[in-house]
Image (tube, rainbow, N blue to C red; front, top):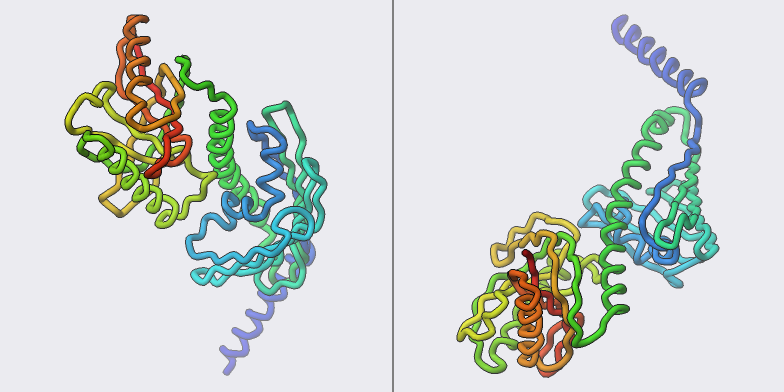
Length: 346
Protein backbone atom coordinates (compact mmCIF):
# COMPACT_ATOMS: atom_id res chain seq x y z
CA UNK A 1 0.00 0.00 0.00
CA UNK A 2 2.85 2.37 0.90
CA UNK A 3 4.52 1.58 -2.41
CA UNK A 4 1.35 2.46 -4.32
CA UNK A 5 1.02 5.75 -2.42
CA UNK A 6 4.67 6.53 -3.00
CA UNK A 7 4.36 5.78 -6.72
CA UNK A 8 1.22 7.92 -6.97
CA UNK A 9 3.01 10.84 -5.31
CA UNK A 10 6.01 10.50 -7.66
CA UNK A 11 3.78 10.39 -10.74
CA UNK A 12 1.85 13.43 -9.50
CA UNK A 13 5.10 15.32 -8.92
CA UNK A 14 6.40 14.41 -12.38
CA UNK A 15 3.15 15.51 -14.03
CA UNK A 16 3.26 18.71 -12.02
CA UNK A 17 6.87 19.39 -13.00
CA UNK A 18 6.08 18.66 -16.66
CA UNK A 19 3.03 20.93 -16.59
CA UNK A 20 5.02 23.71 -14.95
CA UNK A 21 7.82 23.46 -17.51
CA UNK A 22 5.25 23.56 -20.32
CA UNK A 23 3.60 26.61 -18.76
CA UNK A 24 6.76 28.63 -18.17
CA UNK A 25 9.05 27.55 -21.03
CA UNK A 26 6.88 26.48 -24.01
CA UNK A 27 4.59 28.80 -25.97
CA UNK A 28 0.98 27.68 -26.27
CA UNK A 29 1.17 28.32 -30.04
CA UNK A 30 3.94 28.83 -32.59
CA UNK A 31 4.61 31.56 -35.13
CA UNK A 32 7.31 31.14 -37.74
CA UNK A 33 8.25 32.19 -41.27
CA UNK A 34 9.79 30.11 -44.08
CA UNK A 35 11.10 31.47 -47.41
CA UNK A 36 11.86 29.60 -50.62
CA UNK A 37 12.70 30.52 -54.21
CA UNK A 38 11.68 28.63 -57.33
CA UNK A 39 12.79 29.15 -60.93
CA UNK A 40 9.38 29.63 -62.52
CA UNK A 41 7.20 32.64 -63.38
CA UNK A 42 4.89 34.09 -60.73
CA UNK A 43 1.64 33.33 -62.60
CA UNK A 44 2.46 29.64 -63.02
CA UNK A 45 3.53 29.28 -59.38
CA UNK A 46 0.50 31.07 -57.92
CA UNK A 47 -1.93 28.89 -59.89
CA UNK A 48 -0.47 25.80 -58.23
CA UNK A 49 -1.34 27.24 -54.79
CA UNK A 50 -4.67 28.91 -55.61
CA UNK A 51 -6.20 25.80 -57.23
CA UNK A 52 -6.63 23.12 -54.57
CA UNK A 53 -6.83 20.32 -57.15
CA UNK A 54 -3.36 21.37 -58.30
CA UNK A 55 -2.18 21.98 -54.73
CA UNK A 56 -2.92 18.47 -53.43
CA UNK A 57 -1.03 16.82 -56.31
CA UNK A 58 2.37 18.16 -55.27
CA UNK A 59 2.03 19.24 -51.63
CA UNK A 60 3.73 16.50 -49.63
CA UNK A 61 1.16 16.69 -46.83
CA UNK A 62 -1.36 15.15 -49.26
CA UNK A 63 0.77 13.63 -52.04
CA UNK A 64 2.87 11.42 -49.74
CA UNK A 65 -0.08 9.14 -48.94
CA UNK A 66 -1.36 6.56 -51.43
CA UNK A 67 -4.50 5.98 -49.37
CA UNK A 68 -5.70 9.52 -48.77
CA UNK A 69 -9.23 10.36 -49.91
CA UNK A 70 -9.86 14.00 -50.83
CA UNK A 71 -13.20 15.69 -51.56
CA UNK A 72 -13.11 19.02 -53.40
CA UNK A 73 -15.79 21.69 -53.01
CA UNK A 74 -16.79 24.46 -55.37
CA UNK A 75 -15.43 26.84 -56.53
CA UNK A 76 -12.23 24.64 -56.45
CA UNK A 77 -10.05 27.71 -57.04
CA UNK A 78 -9.54 30.98 -55.18
CA UNK A 79 -11.32 32.41 -52.16
CA UNK A 80 -14.05 30.13 -50.85
CA UNK A 81 -12.64 26.88 -52.21
CA UNK A 82 -12.21 24.00 -49.79
CA UNK A 83 -11.35 20.33 -49.35
CA UNK A 84 -11.92 17.63 -46.77
CA UNK A 85 -9.51 14.71 -46.48
CA UNK A 86 -9.26 11.37 -44.75
CA UNK A 87 -6.44 8.83 -44.66
CA UNK A 88 -7.77 5.40 -43.62
CA UNK A 89 -4.24 4.07 -43.08
CA UNK A 90 -3.09 6.71 -40.58
CA UNK A 91 -6.62 7.71 -39.47
CA UNK A 92 -5.68 11.35 -40.06
CA UNK A 93 -8.29 13.69 -41.46
CA UNK A 94 -9.37 17.28 -41.60
CA UNK A 95 -10.44 20.22 -43.71
CA UNK A 96 -8.64 23.00 -45.54
CA UNK A 97 -10.02 26.31 -46.79
CA UNK A 98 -8.78 29.25 -48.84
CA UNK A 99 -10.13 32.20 -46.85
CA UNK A 100 -8.51 34.97 -48.90
CA UNK A 101 -6.93 35.21 -52.34
CA UNK A 102 -5.25 38.25 -53.89
CA UNK A 103 -4.18 36.89 -57.33
CA UNK A 104 -0.41 36.60 -57.80
CA UNK A 105 0.22 38.26 -54.42
CA UNK A 106 -1.13 36.56 -51.29
CA UNK A 107 -3.24 33.64 -50.04
CA UNK A 108 -4.60 32.66 -46.63
CA UNK A 109 -5.29 29.03 -45.78
CA UNK A 110 -7.05 27.59 -42.76
CA UNK A 111 -6.16 23.99 -41.91
CA UNK A 112 -8.28 22.04 -39.40
CA UNK A 113 -6.53 18.80 -38.47
CA UNK A 114 -8.54 15.86 -37.13
CA UNK A 115 -11.30 17.20 -34.84
CA UNK A 116 -9.39 20.26 -33.65
CA UNK A 117 -11.71 23.29 -33.49
CA UNK A 118 -8.79 25.72 -33.78
CA UNK A 119 -7.11 25.94 -37.21
CA UNK A 120 -3.53 26.42 -38.30
CA UNK A 121 -3.40 29.75 -40.15
CA UNK A 122 -1.05 29.89 -43.13
CA UNK A 123 -0.49 33.10 -45.07
CA UNK A 124 1.53 32.75 -48.27
CA UNK A 125 3.13 35.70 -50.04
CA UNK A 126 4.39 35.54 -53.64
CA UNK A 127 7.12 37.93 -54.80
CA UNK A 128 8.49 38.03 -58.38
CA UNK A 129 12.28 38.13 -58.33
CA UNK A 130 12.46 38.13 -62.14
CA UNK A 131 10.26 37.05 -65.04
CA UNK A 132 11.41 33.47 -64.45
CA UNK A 133 11.89 33.36 -60.67
CA UNK A 134 9.51 33.66 -57.71
CA UNK A 135 10.00 33.93 -53.94
CA UNK A 136 7.42 32.20 -51.76
CA UNK A 137 7.06 33.17 -48.08
CA UNK A 138 4.98 31.17 -45.59
CA UNK A 139 3.75 32.87 -42.38
CA UNK A 140 2.50 30.11 -40.10
CA UNK A 141 0.49 30.49 -36.88
CA UNK A 142 -0.34 27.20 -35.16
CA UNK A 143 -3.38 26.81 -32.85
CA UNK A 144 -3.12 27.05 -29.08
CA UNK A 145 -2.44 23.68 -27.49
CA UNK A 146 -3.59 22.41 -24.09
CA UNK A 147 -0.94 22.59 -21.37
CA UNK A 148 -0.02 18.90 -21.43
CA UNK A 149 0.17 18.79 -25.26
CA UNK A 150 2.52 21.73 -25.77
CA UNK A 151 5.57 19.50 -26.23
CA UNK A 152 4.41 19.14 -29.84
CA UNK A 153 5.55 22.71 -30.43
CA UNK A 154 9.17 21.59 -30.08
CA UNK A 155 9.04 19.91 -33.49
CA UNK A 156 6.17 21.73 -35.27
CA UNK A 157 8.42 24.13 -37.20
CA UNK A 158 10.89 21.42 -38.25
CA UNK A 159 8.05 19.18 -39.39
CA UNK A 160 6.48 22.01 -41.40
CA UNK A 161 9.85 22.97 -42.94
CA UNK A 162 10.53 19.36 -43.96
CA UNK A 163 7.13 19.17 -45.63
CA UNK A 164 7.85 22.38 -47.56
CA UNK A 165 11.23 21.08 -48.75
CA UNK A 166 9.65 17.91 -50.13
CA UNK A 167 6.71 19.84 -51.57
CA UNK A 168 8.96 22.33 -53.39
CA UNK A 169 10.80 19.47 -55.07
CA UNK A 170 7.46 18.01 -56.19
CA UNK A 171 6.32 21.44 -57.41
CA UNK A 172 9.52 21.91 -59.40
CA UNK A 173 8.94 18.57 -61.14
CA UNK A 174 5.31 19.43 -61.92
CA UNK A 175 6.15 22.88 -63.29
CA UNK A 176 9.13 21.57 -65.27
CA UNK A 177 6.81 19.32 -67.27
CA UNK A 178 4.19 22.07 -67.70
CA UNK A 179 6.77 24.63 -68.85
CA UNK A 180 8.44 22.13 -71.18
CA UNK A 181 5.09 21.44 -72.84
CA UNK A 182 4.17 25.13 -73.04
CA UNK A 183 7.55 26.05 -74.53
CA UNK A 184 7.34 23.28 -77.10
CA UNK A 185 3.88 24.33 -78.27
CA UNK A 186 4.94 27.99 -78.43
CA UNK A 187 8.02 27.37 -80.59
CA UNK A 188 6.70 24.88 -83.15
CA UNK A 189 7.84 25.62 -86.69
CA UNK A 190 7.09 22.73 -89.01
CA UNK A 191 9.46 21.25 -91.63
CA UNK A 192 12.52 23.32 -90.58
CA UNK A 193 15.66 21.68 -89.16
CA UNK A 194 16.89 23.19 -85.89
CA UNK A 195 19.60 22.43 -83.37
CA UNK A 196 18.49 21.78 -79.80
CA UNK A 197 19.93 20.50 -76.51
CA UNK A 198 17.92 17.92 -74.59
CA UNK A 199 18.31 17.47 -70.83
CA UNK A 200 18.63 14.12 -69.11
CA UNK A 201 15.34 12.22 -68.95
CA UNK A 202 13.90 9.19 -67.17
CA UNK A 203 11.34 7.39 -69.35
CA UNK A 204 9.02 4.57 -68.26
CA UNK A 205 7.83 2.33 -71.07
CA UNK A 206 8.02 -0.93 -73.01
CA UNK A 207 10.47 -2.53 -75.45
CA UNK A 208 8.72 -3.76 -78.60
CA UNK A 209 9.41 -5.50 -81.90
CA UNK A 210 6.73 -5.05 -84.56
CA UNK A 211 6.08 -5.60 -88.25
CA UNK A 212 6.93 -2.64 -90.49
CA UNK A 213 4.14 -3.35 -92.96
CA UNK A 214 1.84 -0.47 -93.93
CA UNK A 215 -0.40 0.59 -91.02
CA UNK A 216 0.72 -2.39 -88.89
CA UNK A 217 3.53 -0.48 -87.17
CA UNK A 218 1.40 2.52 -86.27
CA UNK A 219 -1.43 0.31 -84.95
CA UNK A 220 1.13 -1.45 -82.78
CA UNK A 221 2.42 1.92 -81.51
CA UNK A 222 -1.11 3.07 -80.60
CA UNK A 223 -1.79 -0.18 -78.76
CA UNK A 224 1.43 0.05 -76.74
CA UNK A 225 0.95 3.75 -76.01
CA UNK A 226 -2.47 3.00 -74.53
CA UNK A 227 -0.92 0.24 -72.41
CA UNK A 228 1.84 2.52 -71.08
CA UNK A 229 -0.50 5.49 -70.59
CA UNK A 230 -3.00 3.40 -68.62
CA UNK A 231 -0.23 2.05 -66.41
CA UNK A 232 1.22 5.51 -65.71
CA UNK A 233 -2.07 7.35 -65.16
CA UNK A 234 -4.21 4.65 -63.57
CA UNK A 235 -1.86 2.18 -61.82
CA UNK A 236 0.72 4.82 -60.79
CA UNK A 237 -1.83 7.62 -60.43
CA UNK A 238 0.20 10.22 -62.33
CA UNK A 239 -1.59 13.38 -63.55
CA UNK A 240 -1.05 15.11 -66.90
CA UNK A 241 1.09 17.84 -65.38
CA UNK A 242 3.38 15.26 -63.78
CA UNK A 243 4.39 13.54 -67.02
CA UNK A 244 5.98 14.48 -70.33
CA UNK A 245 4.94 13.82 -73.92
CA UNK A 246 5.12 10.16 -75.03
CA UNK A 247 8.41 9.32 -76.74
CA UNK A 248 9.33 6.52 -79.16
CA UNK A 249 13.06 5.72 -79.43
CA UNK A 250 14.44 3.76 -82.36
CA UNK A 251 17.45 3.42 -84.68
CA UNK A 252 17.71 6.27 -87.16
CA UNK A 253 17.37 4.17 -90.29
CA UNK A 254 15.36 1.13 -89.24
CA UNK A 255 12.31 2.40 -91.14
CA UNK A 256 13.81 0.36 -94.03
CA UNK A 257 13.61 -2.94 -92.08
CA UNK A 258 10.81 -5.50 -92.26
CA UNK A 259 10.63 -5.50 -88.48
CA UNK A 260 11.17 -2.49 -86.24
CA UNK A 261 12.43 -2.60 -82.64
CA UNK A 262 11.54 0.41 -80.51
CA UNK A 263 11.15 1.67 -76.95
CA UNK A 264 7.94 3.61 -76.28
CA UNK A 265 7.47 5.40 -73.00
CA UNK A 266 6.36 8.42 -71.01
CA UNK A 267 8.89 10.69 -69.22
CA UNK A 268 8.55 10.89 -65.44
CA UNK A 269 10.23 13.33 -63.09
CA UNK A 270 12.14 10.56 -61.31
CA UNK A 271 12.62 6.80 -61.21
CA UNK A 272 10.18 5.00 -58.93
CA UNK A 273 9.73 1.41 -57.89
CA UNK A 274 7.45 -0.69 -60.12
CA UNK A 275 6.43 -4.33 -59.73
CA UNK A 276 5.11 -5.02 -63.25
CA UNK A 277 7.90 -6.62 -65.31
CA UNK A 278 6.20 -5.62 -68.56
CA UNK A 279 7.48 -2.08 -68.01
CA UNK A 280 11.00 -0.72 -67.52
CA UNK A 281 12.85 2.57 -67.19
CA UNK A 282 15.25 3.97 -69.76
CA UNK A 283 17.61 6.74 -68.72
CA UNK A 284 18.45 9.13 -71.57
CA UNK A 285 21.63 11.16 -71.12
CA UNK A 286 21.77 14.82 -72.18
CA UNK A 287 21.99 15.00 -75.98
CA UNK A 288 22.53 17.45 -78.78
CA UNK A 289 19.88 16.98 -81.45
CA UNK A 290 18.84 18.02 -84.90
CA UNK A 291 15.10 18.63 -84.61
CA UNK A 292 12.23 18.90 -87.06
CA UNK A 293 8.48 19.13 -86.37
CA UNK A 294 6.18 17.05 -88.52
CA UNK A 295 2.41 16.75 -88.95
CA UNK A 296 0.71 14.22 -91.23
CA UNK A 297 0.39 10.46 -91.69
CA UNK A 298 2.75 8.33 -89.63
CA UNK A 299 4.29 6.82 -92.78
CA UNK A 300 5.08 10.35 -93.99
CA UNK A 301 7.52 10.94 -91.13
CA UNK A 302 10.23 9.03 -93.05
CA UNK A 303 10.93 12.00 -95.32
CA UNK A 304 11.53 14.24 -92.26
CA UNK A 305 13.83 11.65 -90.64
CA UNK A 306 15.81 11.42 -93.87
CA UNK A 307 16.07 15.21 -93.85
CA UNK A 308 17.64 15.08 -90.37
CA UNK A 309 20.10 12.36 -91.44
CA UNK A 310 21.11 14.32 -94.55
CA UNK A 311 21.72 17.41 -92.40
CA UNK A 312 23.93 15.40 -90.04
CA UNK A 313 25.96 13.98 -92.93
CA UNK A 314 26.28 17.41 -94.50
CA UNK A 315 27.65 18.81 -91.23
CA UNK A 316 29.94 15.77 -90.84
CA UNK A 317 28.23 14.74 -87.61
CA UNK A 318 27.81 11.18 -86.42
CA UNK A 319 24.32 10.29 -85.29
CA UNK A 320 22.54 7.89 -82.95
CA UNK A 321 18.89 7.25 -82.15
CA UNK A 322 15.79 9.02 -83.38
CA UNK A 323 13.37 10.28 -80.72
CA UNK A 324 9.77 10.59 -81.92
CA UNK A 325 7.93 12.79 -79.42
CA UNK A 326 4.15 12.76 -79.85
CA UNK A 327 2.84 16.27 -79.15
CA UNK A 328 -0.63 14.83 -79.64
CA UNK A 329 -1.13 11.32 -78.27
CA UNK A 330 -1.09 8.68 -81.04
CA UNK A 331 -4.53 7.32 -81.95
CA UNK A 332 -5.80 5.27 -84.88
CA UNK A 333 -7.30 7.11 -87.81
CA UNK A 334 -5.69 10.45 -86.95
CA UNK A 335 -2.68 12.29 -88.33
CA UNK A 336 0.34 12.48 -86.04
CA UNK A 337 1.75 15.71 -84.65
CA UNK A 338 5.30 15.08 -83.52
CA UNK A 339 8.76 16.35 -82.86
CA UNK A 340 11.51 14.26 -84.49
CA UNK A 341 14.95 14.50 -82.87
CA UNK A 342 18.17 12.94 -84.15
CA UNK A 343 20.96 12.77 -81.55
CA UNK A 344 24.28 13.90 -83.08
CA UNK A 345 27.90 14.13 -81.97
CA UNK A 346 31.34 14.71 -83.47
